[in-house]
Length: 356
Image (cartoon, rainbow, N blue to C red; front, side):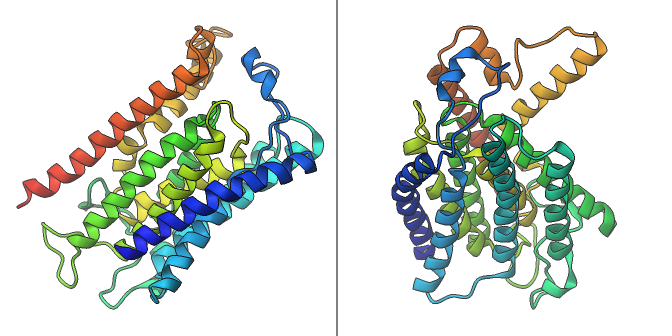
């Protein structure tokens, strides 16, 4: 527990202080955000606001984790290193996207195929390593499982390895893009991420307390390295919380694709490594709604040759177009996130109680 508090606290301080430094540095370098011309007109005032703040989130979380391990004199686990690989790797893809936007002074960075290729490579390497026998512990557990999971592994739903890796790719690509779509209003993605990563920190703490040391049973969790994952969860939560101080309306800096792709992939990584893949659909319900709103908008537009369901997608822009103040949209979407998180944690705990 001491390492969890250390990881979260150190990451919070680094993010809180480091974001101020990043704002000054990026402003001097001219690393400002370009704004879509077809977006809400109120967003045009944000043009030139420093972006790529996700660099601070990533650095704060990684330093927070390793500092906690160093202080407590414990060795990083395979699961933790895999999750950090996914987190940092997707952050690098996002960094390239952000840098191209800044360098070419346009609102679009990497071409969609190049961006997806980068996400796919990172996700497939993560999936292959997470299922590889090379990373088995002394009880034969790999970091991830070939069984589909909701609150724990579903023994009757076992996938061939290639399909399990494909499912991992789908989760990683899907949620990294989902957080990216949500990151459209000041503080929206950062505030929602604080709650969802906080929830996964609690899930990992609970799984560690009810850990199957040797023989799996109905009342314990057959997972690997839950305590170490809790440290990363606390570190990312703290990093997002510190960043939110500067990202809240009116934002002094944006996380950019650097932050949103990294955070979304880390959420998918937590779901995969904790054997709670489908639970993420509940805990991260806001990100799912944002993605579904875009899918519905695009699909309806093509089917009806130009008609729209929403005034603008993702759905947070729809409410802006209806006349809601940006802060109102963000706070209400935070409330929705809180309800999703409370529901998900309630389901998680109720399932364990029902097995006693």
